[in-house]
Image (tube, rainbow, N blue to C red; front, side):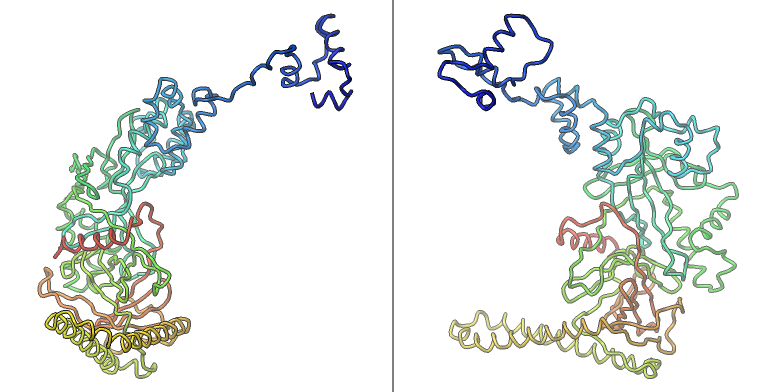
Amino acid sequence: MAVCARLCGVGPARGCRRRGAQREQRREGPADSEPDTDAEEERIEGAGPGEAPAPPARAPLSLLELPPELLVQIFGSLPGTDLPSLARVCSAFRRILRTDTIWRRRCREEYGVCENLRKLEVTGVSCRDVYAKRINPRVKSGRFMKILPDYEHMEYRDVYTCLLHQYRHILGLWQPDIGPYGGLLNVVVDGLFIIGWMYLPPHDPHVDDPMRFKPLFRIHLMERKCATVECMYGHKGPHNGHIQIVKKDEFSTKCNQTDHHRMSGGRQEEFRTWLREEWGRTLEDIFHEHMQELILMKFIYTSQYDNCLTYRRIYLPPSSPDDLLKPGLFKGTYGSHGLEIVMLSFHGKKAKGTKITGDPNIPAGQQTVEIDLAHPIQLPDIENLRDFNELSRIVLEVQEQVRREQQQQEEGEGQEEEDGRPWQGDLQQAAQPAQEDDAGAEGTEAAGAVATQESALTSQPFVLPGGVISRNEDYPRTCRMCFYGTGLIAGHGFTSPERTPGIFILFDDDRFGFIWLELKSFSLYSRIKVSFQNAEAPSREAFDEMLKNIQSMTT
């Protein structure tokens, strides 16, 4: 009506020229051109005297009234775990949830699946590429028809419900229970497969080399609604396996065809092959008799499991802006035992190195080193640093200082227990001096933190003292900071364990070292630069509980 008023005005008589022209047009019959009034004007103008205008078209009041393509977009944005409940609402929702686009989006957003099933269905070469990528490049082309999944009749809903969702609890980082040796397993979604990769340190003593990895098992859909578990251990390709989720944060694997692990040349051929993979050399290349015994012992012990293992979940350590360096996983040198994996974590004024892989002396799960961040050590000049006795004197002085501080703290706690709760008057008298002491302590601590940050920005020369043994002579020649620490040593079979003094050396953001005074040995650690998925601890408490659990397994 406002448009009409603007065009021709409203006269004293009811109606206007524009409305009259429209009445004439209706009497004469339908015109060729479309009317220039909108639906709202016709609704208002069409009402006669005393008649109420027709009600406007109402907005949809139910999801069922929305277009199906819009419902597909809405349902595709919901978590996959909510979709089965949504399907029980009504038959219309159930029909819409059969749309594969919804489940493809959930597979991509929740698990990172980017493969296109329809492309795999029509392109044989893509099938071969996918299979080769997922581990068995040795298989001959004629066997692909038998071993490739049936993509033609597979849907993303099957992939989500029967594979990804069903085995979601085993994704992440795990430590296998292989006696003292441990290990590091990373279970990931890789395309249309779930694969368990065992991560191995580089060959001794090349601590800066990248990690090695090999598959232990894989899970995928061979048929539409049936997930298949295959053992990848050995050299004869994938074969029948089984996975059982024992309880929360624990699962086990079992190989049902252990004959696939055997080699035609018997145990000798298996040992030589294992030695090349594990150490990158032959037994003749290893001249140290004790090292030969350790290697043979590890082969005999680990091969008896035949990939029938129990795994327990581990988390990456949480980080804080105040940490000396970013916590995480490191690979370090351990003399005749080769390279081992250590997890560095920070706990207030302490830093701890926990073994993820171990050896018969210090098994996996034990705390190999502990760094006292409250007691930094100032190294002597480069000439005096070459003298082991001088470095030992400095470290032992700090050890005595730490011992006295611990003794005073224990005596203070004991005195409080004997005296009981102090009188209110004593508390009031002690309040003022205590506040002054706290202020002084805070100032001293702040000054120490500033000094620590300043020293971290500057590097100082570093060289190993004479007589200290190192597996890797290619260690850094400058360091940032040093701290007092203790290292765990024990006899074979973790007998008579004790903590001995040592010195922690921070080289850079990705490398640190530890000098074991009693052993006159040096360990160099280098960061593992792998982005592990589903490995973050849900809380600090959960991480601390995990450390206690893996330590209790070998205590």
